[in-house]
Amino acid sequence: MQKLAEFWNYFVTDFNRTFIVDNRWKFFADGLESTLIMAFFGLILGFAIGLIMAFFKLSKVKPLKWIANIYIDVIRGTPTMVQLFIIYFLVFATVDIDRRVVGIIAFGINSGAYVAEIIRGGILSINKGQVEAGRSLGMTSAQTMRKIVFPQAIKNVFPALGNEFIVLVKETAVIGYIARLDFMAAALKVQSITFSYFVPLLSVAVGYYVIVKILSFILNCIEKRLRRADMR
Image (cartoon, rainbow, N blue to C red; front, side):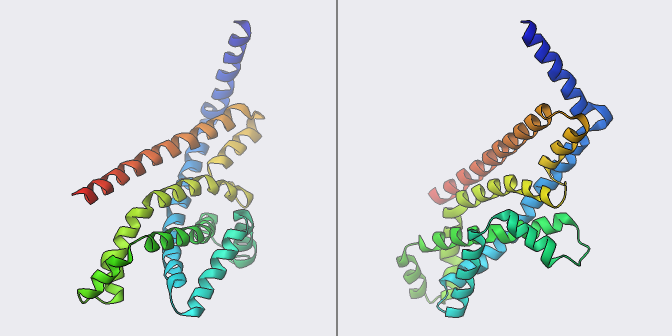
């Protein structure tokens, strides 16, 4: 009991130094905000890039297929951190730019390669008979894709896209290598002040877990509504 009481006193003291003293909880709030902003806009950019690359890869035009294949192969074959360094230290080396924007661009480009394969797989999963039915109704290939194939493909790949967003939230931690902006960086900043790892790192772990659970719940609710719409 004595050891438990000592541990509790240590925890309370460390918690107070981590969050209460000098309003250090604001570090975590700002870091969480940056993490969610970079993940959200990174996914939007990644979806846009992935959509284009998916159609490039499905295209019968060979140069477009080559562009998509090279992009996907290079991005999936190199670490996110290396891509972040290249974009920040090489591409934007002489440009005064917000590092959050650099993060959004880097994470968007990285996510785009995975989203491209997700969307491509979703489009290919649609039965060819539906394409033929659309064409028999007088639709063009573009109209068939836009009105029949793509809406169904998005519903099919929604769980995978949601999972990509969750992965992206956690991957934003690598932004700390160029700037202490994210949720993880807040813990490191507080640790450098308090010289304690326990509560700061535990708080970040719990924080990420709660974020993932909330996002998973929201995505599951959306997925169920999409399924109900299909059953009508």
